[in-house]
Length: 203
Length: 203
DNA sequence: TTCAAGGTAGACAGGTCGGTCTACTTCGGG
DNA sequence: CCCGAAGTAGACCGACCTGTCTACCTTGAA
Image (cartoon, rainbow over all chains, first blue to last red; front, top):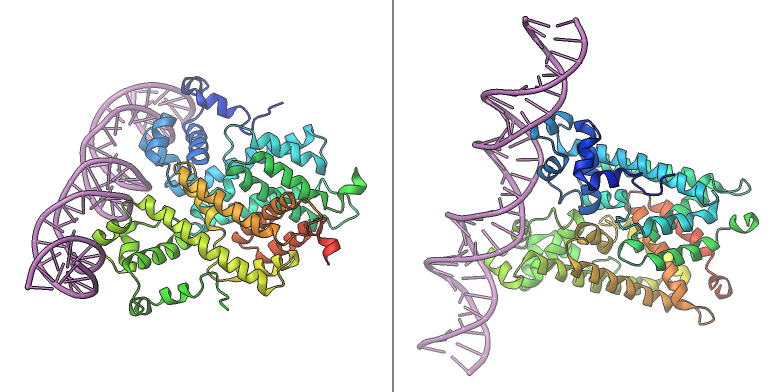
């Protein structure tokens, strides 16, 4: 049962030698490296040269796999969506798979030393204006998140409506945790969630 | 009574001729231009050359006022904090100055055509990692916001605690509105706010 | 055996970035 | 009247950006 958001991928990458050992394709190495750097340092401020160097490939290989940096950005978001969603659903399961599970799951995320906020909110801030594909991926991701939350709600309420509100509270908590107040974020989230009508009959 | 977040400054700037007419100092013109461009297009993607051109000053003048782009970024955040907070407080007054006033105030903000989310959340995403001063300004801004919200809460509750939660709900609504769902954002915000204990006795 | 796909190394192009520099002008207060 | 502060115009610098290019090597399948 993998506890990290990165499903161990992070650990493997943090040691370049290990990443070379496990025979990953050039494309996978680029994508993994881009994921780490884009998320940690931002998309704009990470040059392709750096990704190329740290992934241990050459420019030709890089541009053969991703004709432009924009292609890599989109691939990065798709990849991030896959691994984050699967981590999130797994973490929910581990904590009881109900509305009350969200807080400890967020706690787990926020206290991860590699936590830098929501990659999609970040990307929207950096590229939203200039890349409509990014906006599209953000919508996809957040729609997926809302669907998962819907599954935690009882049937005797407007699930879509409440899932939307809960997802918003999560986003609020994420940005709050990002500027260095993870405990206040969890605290505030619990306050907001208390009001969700569906919660009380469930407990 | 000024209704725009920009207190008319935006309108003046949108017409460069007007901005020249009103004899603003070079520093003010730079700051106003930077505010528009940084907020609309992002900080990283706005070069000093562009600000210089659109403010109608020269490089020497620019660098005499702001020794580096980083200085301008900090000045921009301070400026933004001042004008946003004064708009926010004014808007709250116009809508009754209680907890229920927040939703219409947000509505006003989100539907402003120049709305691009919270400048501080955006800046945090772009520069947070590399500029600690930015993180500091974000903290200042959000603390100021919480203080204002505290003033809307009745005394028979833990105001600090609830203000913190409400501020988080606002942030959630802001990021949601940013990716193009302002009505859902307001809707979700109202749902979350319903649960605030202090609201019911007040109505 | 041949050949294409995908890998290697690294020079290079054209643009933008933040920032410095010289040289000249305008203008208000001591 | 003169001086200094603040303005003008625009060339220039080195660093870094995305993306292209030549030239060579390895490997596996037809």
